[in-house]
Image: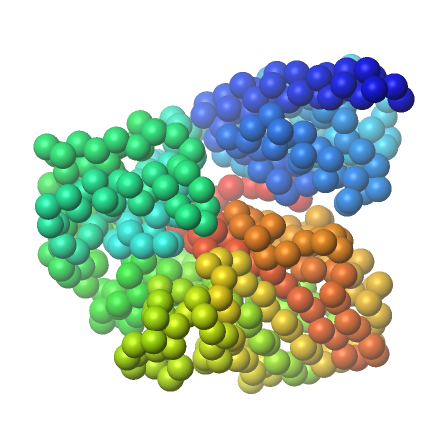
Length: 477
């Protein structure tokens, strides 16, 4: 191909991606439909992101998916009364072109494939959400909720509850939402309404409330009712503490973004979210590490059976550690986080059993905090009930990541060059690094990357939807 043809090809792809963007936006804003390409979300994606998502298809199926091949499927989707679902047009297009050649049949094919999600009515009730705490996870949850703003969005961020309230606090909170050293700038506009103590982000009006205890707030004063309160503080972890939220008028359910104590259900989306009942007023979304490893462990156990194993977590440092050496109540965590690898305890391996009881008593775990600000890795060393090989195990996990109920939790990479910073912003709970997989007979070692902030926050949003009965189909299944 000549140099001019390369440029012409690029311009055609660029123009096709640009033409796709308004359709993608309208599908979400008006119908609540999130479009994906082999698990890569296209909501608010740039033209370059759309082109890259198409290029990644080759890694999964061995062939390119051209934008001119996928564009007719987006057009067909925009003509269907599909509501509140995720649609992977990459998978639909690849499947279609493997078996058809006639463009005129695409509309009928899409109607058939998406029949489950076609609904002329939209009677789902809007639900209020309150973020109690606004640290690393709280701000990322805010970004994710605001990203989905539109008339079809049934989960509305209404308020943030904070301690303090000193002069300048509101602007500083807004500034931390605007700018993030790890995840980059906020995608949009953030304004401050000092008079009414509110932040307005991409048109979403967020009331900022100051309180020192969960039971001090009357949410109904702000027009907030029947709300799900997401506790990001980590201060209260048992039923007595988290139950304080339910004493506040306007609050009806509580979700903890940390492992819970006692009998509170620890839920990992994709694994045991079916255990959530309408009667559950308090639920935990477990930890980032538990979310990263449990889906992979479930997948492996389903096929091979797990006898026992050990999980070693190589975890980025967190706000709980010190920047420089100073007193800390926990062992070793007082030493400077940016300067040291720090061995510490983790309950993630034991916590797996709360979401996946079949593995109770079979796993041990430890953690090493390392001097990186985000993205972690779990090294899962397991003994299996049946033999396998590296090739078979990787092929199985690849298919699981693409074509199973765990496709939104498990991602899979075959890159020989990927490093931790490449996974910043990953929306999956965990990413299997297939090149590092070791398997010999009944013994296997898996390396699973995870964005312990953003990937976990995406899991939390999914649990929030489940708690509010805002279930979202993923098609094709």
